[in-house]
Image 1: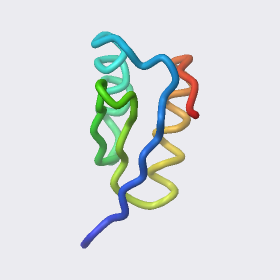
Image 2 (image 1 turned 30 degrees about the horizontal axis):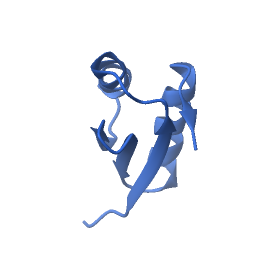
Image 3 (image 1 turned 90 degrees about the vertical axis):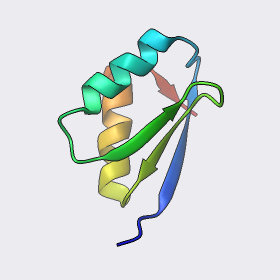
Image 4 (image 1 turned 60 degrees about the vertical axis):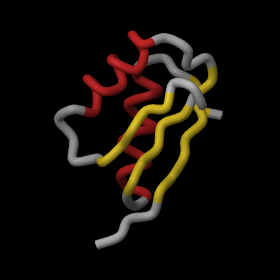
Length: 66
């Protein structure tokens, strides 16, 4: 099954510790994602439910989605 890719731009995503926090927060979910520190974004593969889970996790970490 092919999923759509959604790119969430994250303001001030600039540290490896932030990437690790995102990965830890989403580790126990079924979301397929990757974090691109260079481009300051999180790439989510899936439907809107998956995007919602990632958005919520980012907000709980205090990160701002553009």
